[in-house]
Image (spheres, rainbow, N blue to C red):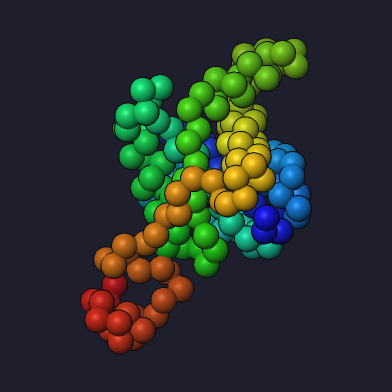
Length: 174
């Protein structure tokens, strides 16, 4: 198993929950909730700052599938956001099945005695913890990273790649 801090991301319509692992990849803990910026600027910049501050080695984004396993509008939103992160970051981004993570997070908060009105500020962080912990546990049991790697496509160059390098690889400049 690889060592280093991982960052878990729960993408929502209004908020994005962030969690982190310890450096041994054993335990996930909440970090913060970021307001969603649908232009993909402020929220991505904040996540980039958190990743840099933690010297993270990987980002795990929850993939919200329907209970049947089918894609939904939320699935497409999370995939699009993961692709934004993959272009912006120089570390791997992975998508991990997160079915029922928000429901589980709400149950955890209720069991801890939190009233529904006080859930909103932290439910996204708890969901991110659940997503990341699932990924860490899966990696430990399988001996391989959980989920699916997010690869920027040929027309989606990583932000760090200068246009001249893109031309050298036969890609059009951005």
